[in-house]
Image 1: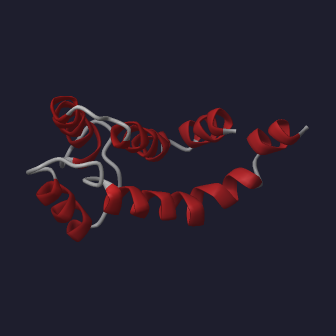
Image 2: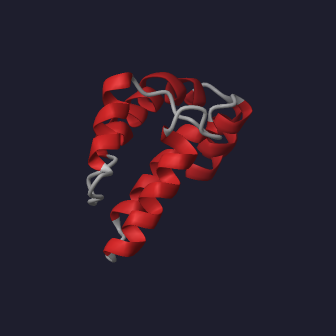
Length: 108
């Protein structure tokens, strides 16, 4: 299901949302503080910072809170941004996916 949804998002040029969500889920499972800091930096550079290669569409306040959370990375550093992106996918991308050929193929 996730692979089909990701393919659908790629067809709509919005796969960064699912990639960000998956990266955050992986990040939360990280135990080592050093690894957590490395992953936080990578997620920030890839998805959050202005002009990031896969910049996700989050509001200024969410971006500011996320940046503040990264001063001392914790498993919850990206929670606010991840919730915003999940809500965006749930309200926008998911309904279109359910009506798409990608989904019709999946449920056959």
